[in-house]
Length: 247
Image 1 (spheres, rainbow, N blue to C red):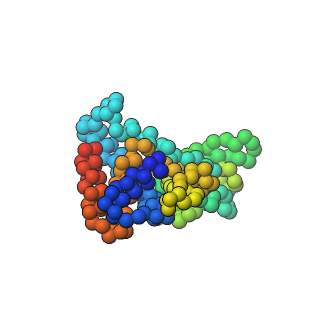
Image 2 (image 1 turned 90 degrees about the horizontal axis):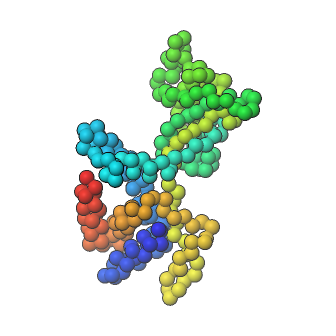
Image 3 (image 1 turned 90 degrees about the vertical axis):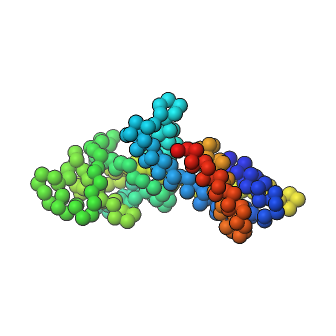
């Protein structure tokens, strides 16, 4: 999809000689456009939930909420957390799990003292301001069957402290999409040639139905970059119309 998006963007820019968009600039704009759309999924999902609660949403093919759930689920990942020391574990990141997390859904605890490991329970997230009171209470203190966790920066602390070994804590989370990268090899008639066989090639991870919106968002960034108000205005008006139609 990324080559199709780039060709469309260049076609719009070159029609009136607005300027040339280099591969490096395109990749930067593509990354930001994808992040914009990715984060917009969650706002759209929240909007559809509110419509459903007020009985204004559709069913079957008109069930937009279900479609958004399926798209967001594509970014759902479950990985063991890297053990740091004691009952502390590293939050999902590029260096630990291979990708950064956008939203932690579940923290799952296991007893791995004797293989195969045994599932103990899903840890409840507790804010730092409440964990001390919770941990000191005889009634609400975390247990192996009802564990809890706190998030402090990039560190997840699991309670009780008996969860203190590798493979004992697993995390289900929504990851960020991978940065798109349009790769090329040589120049043909002054133009770079698309090469999707490159080791660092990365296509967009969004749904094909978002191709038009990606084009419009990249055109907005390109319009600002080349200081061409007409390009930005065209892309912005088209995007505004698309948003209005979705509602």
